[in-house]
Image 1 (cartoon, rainbow, N blue to C red):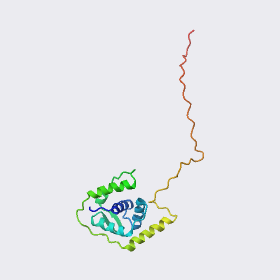
Image 2: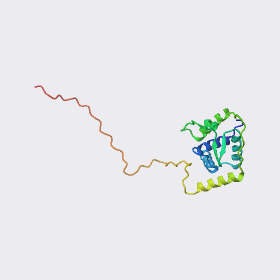
Image 3: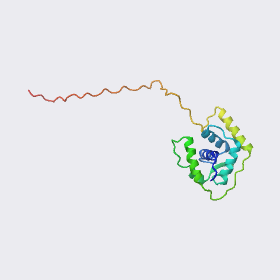
Image 4: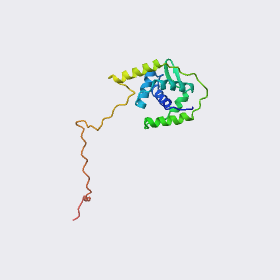
Length: 170
């Protein structure tokens, strides 16, 4: 697939994250892209990337949702778990550069209103107090011990005394 844009890789990873069990809605893909990139993507870039990935046979539209094709799933499978988002994007970009589309598929046609509605819904959801499962939990700055959780003292070292015989001569 040539040329490869950064947003194509981001959209591929976001779709993979949000469509594990069922086709993902646009709002879920925007939330996953926000998780990877730490910013909400531009609407025009998202429309172009959906079209490019669909033409190359990597994303399909199913019942109003979006899912990865089997070819795309092989590209994003077996990514290192401990790798951060930049490393994962680099690995997928490398695999995507080696990918060659077998045929031209129909493009996914999105309107600017659909994408803007999804971005607005994501912004409203992130501002609310509801729990977003795609956002990682914040870690505490320092380790706080709970009251009553004390460490035990170490056991005293055993002293090696010479063994006393059980019986004495004399």
